[in-house]
Amino acid sequence: MEPMTGQRILVTGVTGWVAGPVATSLAAAGNEVFGVARFKDPEQRVPLEEAGVTPLAIDLASGDLSAVPADLDLVLHFAVAKADNFDIAFKINADASADLMEAAAERSDRLQAFFHCSSTAVYAPAGQEPRVETDLLGDSHRPMPGMPTYSISKIAAEVLVKYQARRLGVPTVIARLNVPYGDTYGWPLFHLLMMEQGMAIPVHVDGPTSYTPIHADDITASLPHLLSYADSPARIVNWGGDQVVSVEDWSTYLGELTGLTPTFEPTTATIPAIIPDLTLLHEAGFASSVDWRDGFRRMVEASRPDLLQ
Ligand SMILES: NC(=O)c1ccc[n+]([C@@H]2O[C@H](COP(=O)([O-])OP(=O)(O)OC[C@H]3O[C@@H](n4cnc5c(N)ncnc54)[C@H](OP(=O)(O)O)[C@@H]3O)[C@@H](O)[C@H]2O)c1
Image (cartoon, rainbow, N blue to C red; front, side, top):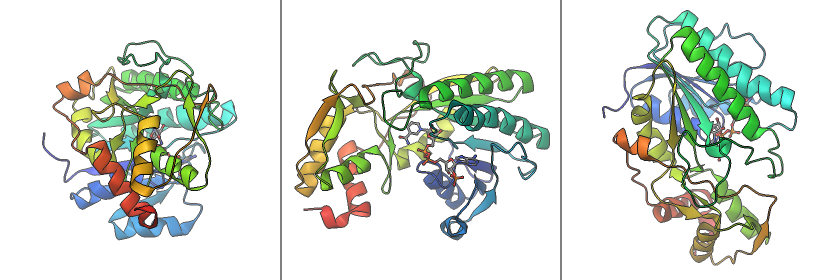
């Protein structure tokens, strides 16, 4: 698969965990990259500009998308709101996704693809059974404090994105991401900080609390493979790393790296295990390259070297 280069790309959610490293990697690979966020703190623009990304301050929920650049080759849409209120969550996660597709398509007659980042949060959990793209949807994140609207608004987003892909004829792929992490971010890093504070880590009573974490390097490397599915009607593809790892296992490993001892709180008030079936991603020629133990060590080395033993 050819790496992406020489393209004019809009990346949304660029001040966030996942999209920031994607945008800077694509800029380093010789693409012209525009990065969208609200940039309430202008300081957030600086590292992006230094990495060759052009920051664009757009409130995607405002309805005014006139600043979306013309002649884009590609839109990578990662922006998301984790809101308590369904009106806000639907407006940003669903309505704004549809508006963005329309704005990009109106301004470019060379738009090759719209990439919509979804989440395996849209699945109804089924224990250790891998979920295929056609499996039942559900409200897996409702029990998680702070995420009462997440699963349902991400499902709503998929529906509107699919609708727009068909209506506008824009080749579209909806990628359902499962536990992204990188050298500077991720749920496992959050767990490490909880361990440092002596806080118990919630794990599901129906354990092990298993996922398929994927490192930022593999997130970027997998993009051309996922984009090969872009079509109208839209295609949906699961997105994760090749290894199944549980919160229990990764926290124990983080303990081995740091000497901190994790304690676990089995509860129903957390996200149950969700393991995506990655057959489609693999059929597109992608296999993840970062072993989870190497990736987690890199994360601690980069983010909290003081905690390493
Ligand atoms: N994090 C995970 O573990 C995980 C797991 C599976 C899937 N995903 C998916 O991955 C994608 C990225 O998630 P993330 O965790 O990296 O997100 P994040 O860190 O919460 O960042 C959210 C981004 O969206 C932007 N945003 C929010 N509201 C906006 C608005 N009204 N207008 C413009 N930009 C807005 C934020 O920018 P400002 O606030 O600066 O405007 C920020 O850049 C999402 O689609 C998410 O559903 C994430």
